Image (cartoon, rainbow, N blue to C red; front, top):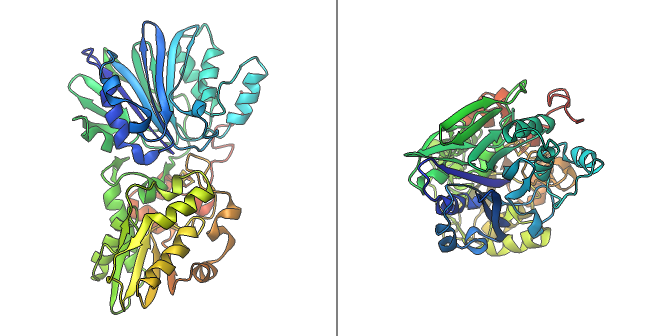
Length: 457
Ligand code: SF4
């Protein structure tokens, strides 16, 4: 998962500080690296570094650069290693001029495309799937850039929400299935694109609309022109996990409020089974909190902020190694003293992936005095890996793929354990199941036929 941001000022105002602020609002989507790109004097310029936005980039330095169009990226690694050269944006100056790209999602045919291109002389600078898009463009040296990009996009499959920069033009494009979110915003004559609408607030821009699945926006001095990719998807596949876990609750994605979806998920859990007498409801911060609130309100049971999160430790799920992940869990969450004493604790979390966090949570809450610990999960069991941009592990490491729910309950040490179904997930989000991807829950991946059979170049 990553975050992308793009800005274009038709009045010629500098925009790099806006990009910096936009990336800061998208920090939850990636903490491994951050970067920005702009064009000047016919060349692409890039600044990027490892770590959080404020560690990787200098705000005051960016504020002084006179660029009226720029893109930015925050990264967490799903394809390619964690090395600095895989940080984005990626950029190049080729026969048709400068190009830079920031990408959220995973391309499912990147390996096949890379070998095809390498066999024709392409020299890859990174191990990042995104580079195949630039290489595909560079292999069309006499085709104008927009056309070359559109041709490149017809060759790739999988998930991409991208911001692309040419010499004097910002492009935003979303794959035909709409896996990852992408939003369009405006402030006077300035236009912005961002992975989530929450990034517009901080720069004083208004959220106009979502970029549609299969849409390409061309933003330049004339304004915004909408084009369509020449590919028709059989159905939409907006990532349902964005609503459960990944997106910020103050974002609206594909017309649905993440905040409302999370509370609905909790209410759904409440309708699935009564809370015991003398119970209190608490959520695992931050992504379990709203579902816990929804559950408590629907069930009429007291809600307590019973678990305190150390805000200076990153999100467990997006740290790249098991060792760091485990260390993160230990220092990240602490129960509020006295709150659980003699109570039946109903603890709501967004999901169970490897089971490390859930097991530790149950023993911690029990250790804090709870008589019983009832785990409630605001999503269906995660049984399959994601190939579209979220770094879930292989099925062997997914605890729900290896155990049924009763075995899983025993493994994590809870007194009861309850999930919601895929149908309930979609109802809570408020979109039809045929418009949502639920592949990590039910294994319903894009098949070759649906992806258009464009696996070969
Ligand atoms: S597989 Fe899961 S995480 Fe991946 S896009 Fe689909 S719903 Fe989202």
